[in-house]
Image (cartoon, rainbow, N blue to C red; front, top):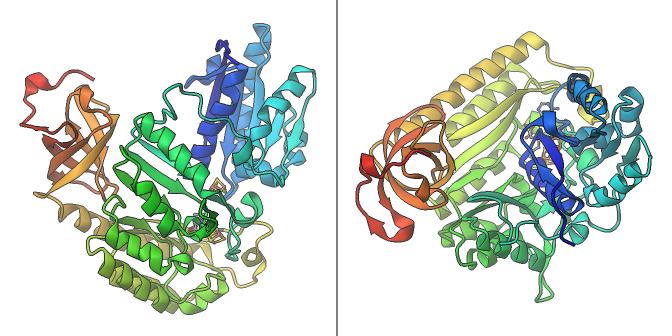
Length: 470
Ligand code: SAH
Ligand code: SF4
Ligand code: F3S
């Protein structure tokens, strides 16, 4: 059904990479209805906020954002245009009908598992309906209902892109909303994932990050009748020609099985970087968090991974000030961080999420102690990150040049270990892998110099004259 894009779609995405993936797929679902994506909210006919519920006051922030965007609706109305407002994602899932009650300007509330139904929902809006809410967890998976990507040359999602393979979570860490907003664990069948990855490779994607809330719990039905884990799936995807790099996120320490560890040893396309959240270093706290692993389990696991892949860099998530956390528990966290050594990490103060078990615990940690602990932890993590980056100065590495830089003649790439690497390079190298020498290290980036443009097999320094304005 060829449709001429006549309307504009603006999606603002919050939260994790799963939301980034979902937003891209919402655009695919809406393309046949004539919606073309825009970066400019002011010209949009359809505005979607794809929300995240993980941080404090997440819902309140969505309501204020809606308040700010209201003028777009009024402006559209003044021009005789109806601007549709949709709220998607995890706040939508959690708030449901409350959202249209509190913000009547919202036309549509839909959850992470129902956006494949957007065409029906939009048709109902076009027919005059208002305030529609669809936050089911339908029995039919959205993945079976989503159209193939809209780009004619396959999934044209850029040189480095996400692919959702798993959703939901059955772990129920006592602080976390995700099991409630994303629902139960679900794995897509192998054949669907392979087909999507092949389309992405055909469209020029060189690096795929497999996504799941609990991605290493993946257990998908395979064409051979067996159930494959993530290690097996990665090995299959590595066979796809054109794909140069694979990653996956986010993993739970409990689901890191032998096959997946072996994939880190055997599969060169699997990048030597792993986001493996531990949250805390004290067994008391880990137990209260319902994490289902000890600090020692985690240390042993990291040891096994580094035996398999000695240059593996780790990233993590940490929560300080979990209810009942004492100074000596926090000292255990610092010790674990010192022992493991992180290349990068996220750390948060614990904040109660209504409806989660930890929120009701009496023994909450005072705000001041949380702030002190967070500062101490971030200091240590920051030092580790800078030390990791500095150790790369003078070395050469393969960098995927996946986006344009801010300056003319500059491209930005990703190192194997996820650092951003700005280099001077002509725009024609966008989407290719280059051999880069690191000349300078910062906290959040490695400054590089292109040595060889590996992909095309030709070598030579890129002189200034070869560097066209991007
Ligand atoms: N599925 C992933 C990430 C979940 S949310 C995982 O299991 O690791 C991302 C991070 O947000 C978590 O790892 C945790 O560190 C943090 N987080 C989640 N709920 C939180 C809360 N109530 N307070 C503070 N941090 C939280
Ligand atoms: Fe949340 Fe824990 Fe599941 Fe991660 S594993 S999504 S932190 S419940
Ligand atoms: Fe946020 Fe939902 Fe992702 S709560 S972190 S957008 S799963």
